[in-house]
Length: 193
Image (cartoon, rainbow, N blue to C red):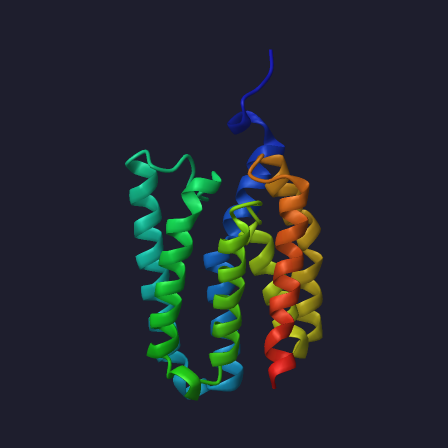
C-alpha cells in the first residue's frame, strides 16, 4: 500500500523547506537585510512596509485558496498566476513608494525584483517559472557583498529545486528557468550602479 504525500517524510520535508524558503519570506528578509545595511534609520519604515505587503498578498492568496479558485497556496496552475503577478507588482510598487521611491537605498533592488516578476508573468504564457527558485537566486546574488551569506543562500538552491520537484509543483525546466531568472535579475542592481 503506497503512502499519500502527507505521510511521506521526504514530501513533508520538501513542503517544510518550500514554506521556509517561500518568496514572501526570502524577499522580505532580503529587503530587511539590505535596509539594515544601507539605511538603518529607515529600517522601521521598511519593516512596516514589508509586514503590510506580505499581509495583503497572503490574505489574498488564502482567500483564493479557500474559495477554491486555486489548487494550492503556491498558485501552482499557470492560469492561477496572472492575478498573483498583478497583485505582487501593485503591492511592490506601493512598497517602493512607501520606502521613498528613487530616493530609497533599496530602490534599485525593489525595481529589479519587479522587473523579474514582469518577465516571469510574460513567460507564464509558455512556462510556469518557479518563483521560489527565482527569489532565492535573486537574494543570493544581491547578498554578494556578504560572501558567506550569499554562498549559504545559493547553496540552498539545489535543495529547494529538489523540494519543488518532489512536491510536483514544477518541472525541471521550470525550476532551472526560475533559478536563471533570479540570478540574472539579482545581478541587475550591481550592473546599474
